[in-house]
Amino acid sequence: MSVRKVQIGQLWKKDGTSDIYLVTRVYDEALSTVAVLRKSGAEQEALIRVRIGRNAQGQTLPGFSPAVQDERL
Image (cartoon, rainbow, N blue to C red):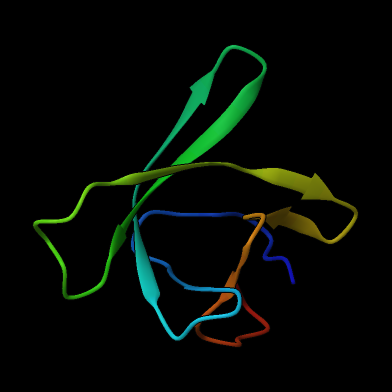
């Protein structure tokens, strides 16, 4: 599933689990865009970097799906 644009503050659910992650940073790196995710409720755990994918509908985070299904995202 994709959203128009991955933004800071969005919640994403890791596929195959019930873990929810918060997007804390989005930045450009060489030829790609990267999102930094933090597990919700686990502030002491390491951050996860995920390369943002693109398709005709918008942007995606491989291995994740939006936690909130909203048409306006």
